[in-house]
Amino acid sequence: MTANMPKRAPPERAMVLAAGLGLRMRPITLETPKPLIAVGGQPMLDHALDRLDDAGVDLAVVNTHWLGDKIAAHLKARRRGPRTVISHEPELLETAGGIVQALPHLGDGPFFVVNSDIIWLDGPVPALTRMARIWDPATMDVLLLLMPTVWAVGYEGAGDYHLDPLGRCRYRKPNELAPFIAAGVCITKPELYRGLAPGKRGNLEIWKKAEAEGRLYGVRHDGAWYHVGTPDAIPEVDAQLKAPAVRWVEP
Image 1 (cartoon, rainbow, N blue to C red):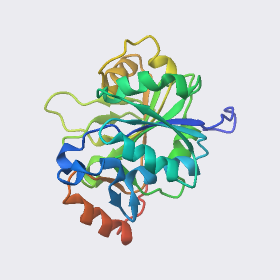
Image 2: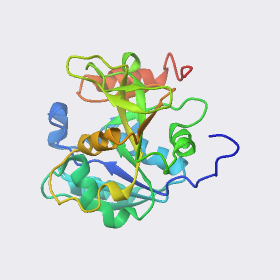
Image 3: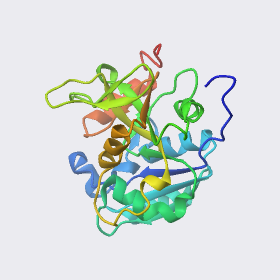
Image 4: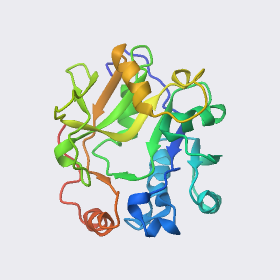
């Protein structure tokens, strides 16, 4: 952001995606919902909510499905912000479908979306703060946090996106490797979801439309990032969080 650009207030609301079944985490998730699995000394859900609180988010909508009563009880017992609202899904609605259901709580302004099964360490400037500073609703419909594929702990895929010099994202072509993955954090607009029929649908559908219109942007994460997908990943990430070799890297 240049000195001539108007200052914008950071998003005050957020959607935290916490409704998954956590099948790859079984048998742990037979009794504990994945967002409540402790990694680095606290439940993964608390890592996300604490980051949002630090960024000034006032209200977080948390969607639930599997063992949702346990997530609701955990949120009720939290002693720090943000304020939380439960959006329970009797049937899994996937990412975009969950946001469509939660729209009445998300307001009219841009909001953060955060996955509850990822953990990140901030660089010199917190990632959510950097995103809020870069966010420009005049040119952007979605701003993704992107993690360099080679540095993403717990990820073994082909990557997701290329990033051009202006910060616009392009999804990888079939059989193509991409240097960045979508890191499970974004800023988006409620109007992208209004008018969509209720039901199952993913955010990739929304993002591809924004990309086609030249309005899908990304920002490279400059800290460590962890996906905790299986029981074996828990001690690995625990160890790295206690003494990470690299807390941040130059963009």
